[in-house]
Image (tube, rainbow over all chains, first blue to last red; front, side, top):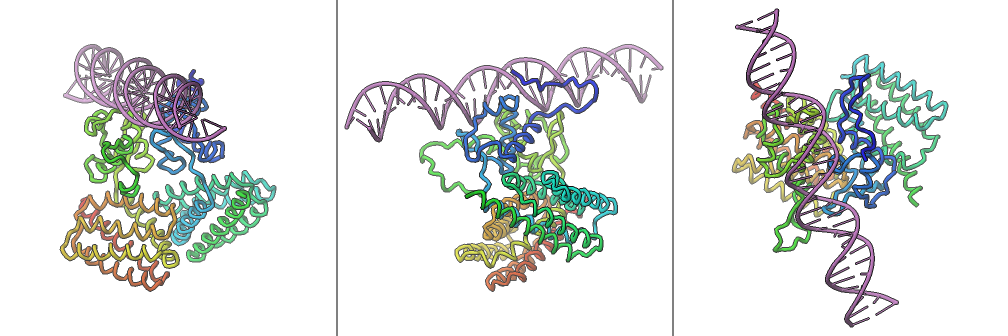
Length: 230
Length: 230
DNA sequence: GCCGGAGAAAATGAATGCAAAATTGGGATC
DNA sequence: GATCCCAATTTTGCATTCATTTTCTCCGGC
């Protein structure tokens, strides 16, 4: 009944053999992020095992990790449920992210390398193209890459890790709503300002703009979320 | 994750059976935090199973969670190793924590309740007593409680969670060194200033003092760490 | 007709078993 | 004497199995 995933003989490319539980973590997190599992509803392990084509052992390992990450809640002897993501939770995430954005802005000019700056410029140009053809899904992905690259450029592993976790959780809220296309234009405009401050090395202004950008984006998502929640 | 064993109406007579993997996570994290497992050294699962008195399944589940938390690294088919905590990592943790302390200070005055303020005052008095009798271990614990209470009082779950994780990792570095008793006096003094700003509701000053307190503490720990690392 | 409980079915928590991979040790070769 | 290679042992990854616990169902009592 193995769903044909045991393909350890990959002759062509000597790719590392897939660590099952790691794959399961990512797949499950993706399923939850995309909203394909009802919040608060019980999900039997057997059903997930069949869906993912794995046995219970790696699935349960993945559930433990996702519980630690805060995506699911494990109730002893009563199964796992998807943690609901409500407005308050999203607001909290954006507030915390704002603090980190501020710090990123303050320290970025003194730490970013030319190569990193060039990389970020390239992402920025791609984003402008996405916005012009109103490709919202591509924009969302690129937007995350843009901000992740900014975070990475301060060369602080703890920040990168925490920032990534925050983005993953926020993505859940983002995918739960239909993002207003007009927000893309605002976002690009704010990115322009961010890039200008970054090129100029103006730390305090950069911090301010990053924080404001985060605040406005958060408010837009919250407004949409609370509207669709009715 | 707060050390609450209080609520949860447990049947008085029953020896409560807390889920094994949760216990294992906490025990293993404690072992790592206390430095009882050599960094970077291979640790066979069987040995840990025997030490903790559990079978491999819950142990492996715990390792997955600790890997996600960043305490161990899982190398495919080659076992888990304790992630070394070097100066750079500690510096990164304190830098991130500084950003959060700043945010806590900015928002705390407008959100803290009288009961929370009273609770924090009580912890502060306890800390002063610890300092006077130079009880460093008790001070370290109380100090964490003090700052955790401050974080909790802004009523932001994401912050509480992240802050707790940071504290746990920093604790590892703290226990790896012999903290200089003279630092206790400095800490208490800075706490006095923090409390004064908190009582006065001076958000910006509070933020500044919290961030400075974090920075100084981090520098003290880093100095000790780099000294003993020679 | 509604509620409560005993038993059955199903789901979870943990242990064991088995195959694949890695480490170790020994021996042959240079 | 050192190095390389190959088999034996150990260890890991995952599946399966066993033991509780929970949930569902059905039956009787009120």
